[in-house]
Length: 91
Image (cartoon, rainbow, N blue to C red):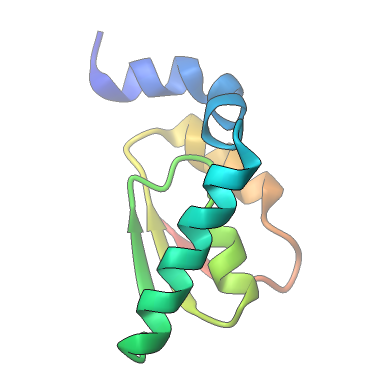
C-alpha cells in the first residue's frame, strides 16, 4: 500500500490522535506563535498538514498559509473544517 493510501485510510480518525491532548496541542500552538512573532513570520508553509490542525488556527490569526499533504482524504477533511473567510491555499 502506498503512503498516501495509508493516510487516506486513516484520515477519518486523524483528529482523534492529532488533537487528543488539548494541553499538548495548545503548547504546540503557543511555541509556534512565539517563534513566528520573534522572527516576524507572516506566511507559513504547513507541509504534511493532515487535517489542518495547525494551518486553520494560524490562518485565523492572520498568517498567510499554504497547507500541503500527500493524502487527498486528509485535505478534503481539512477543507471541510476550514471556516468561511479563512484563506488557506491547499495543495
